[in-house]
Length: 56
Image 1 (cartoon, one colour):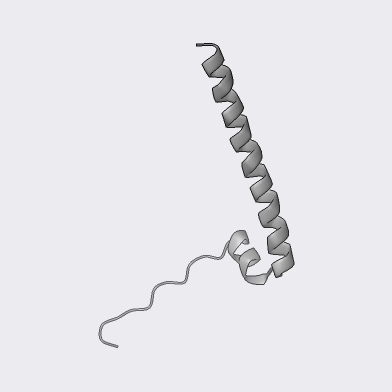
Image 2: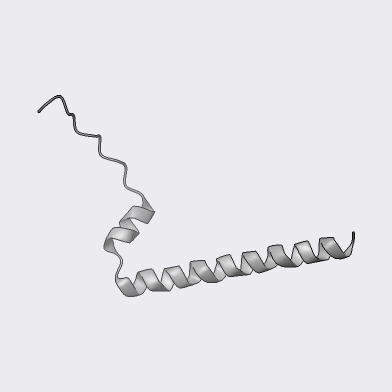
């Protein structure tokens, strides 16, 4: 109608399936793991920068 066409349906992914079907509890558990890992990586970067600054 009016020259508008439907967009092709996007492929489903494991992530999109999880977001659609996981319970709130499961999502919170995964978010917690992701945030913990992100914090660990950020702390590693900070430590590497501090070491590099000490050697300069």
